[in-house]
Image (cartoon, rainbow, N blue to C red):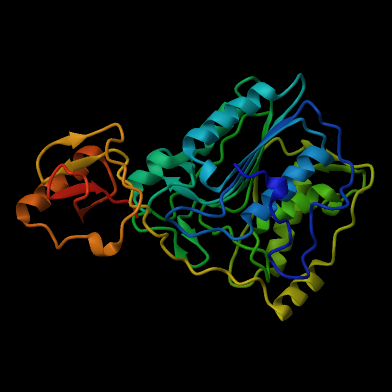
Length: 376
């Protein structure tokens, strides 16, 4: 796992957007709080999210140095699988002290769950199939319940959307769009969502960094302290982020939502930071141009069997990693299998639930050819 503080925290959205991990105002102490930060910029098989790591790095600095938290656990990119997210949420619940809260910051993709009406937060290893979304996504409601499992209030900042879409189109084939997602949270907890369930959560106006998690962090520095009392409350954060996005976004509607306890004090500032001139920032960023968004490309296959193989076209299924291919050239693939082999591949795919298989030249000594799991 790469320490977030070692990651570059330069603003990716354009030269005008200020850095959020320098000149921190004191906002605590909230030493009894604990936090989990999940940031997925580099997804295995779906569109990446440029700037997610930079936002997470700034959040880590803020939570540790601004609020004074002792337990701040980051999960970045490939470390952010469903299993790890749930495990670290439980650890954060255990780490919160008397009177403490548990922060959950998620910067990544989301999708609707038509069966439950809940939102799914997608792990880094999600594949482009509905089954994979269900298996490798984390139920928002379950995550918040686990984080609050020891009785501590949860403060969740979810920079994801549940529309099944991105700014460039559908997140993946087969995702059911526009499924209403209901935000449910315990009475003493607070949930800040990047957008309504029929909207897309995207980048900053004139920029490429994820907008919501950036603006929420700016709000906690004092940008949203509307009444000037130094106490930044959840409803002030929601009002500020909605105002910025509704005023300055072009071609996209993104309306942040708030569920749960609106009066929760998220930061108690001794020196609130004045809000920057967002109109001037957006104009400058659009004039100079944002950091370019990478093209949505399917990642190169890993060519890894994960211990599933058939040698010589026979019915011998090997497990336990006996065959663990790590790489081979595309030229090693054989021609399309005949009907019998195709039926066998289909049946193996159905039984194991794997995403696909390819025929490769043999190098195992177990037959003329081997069939291995083909991930893409």
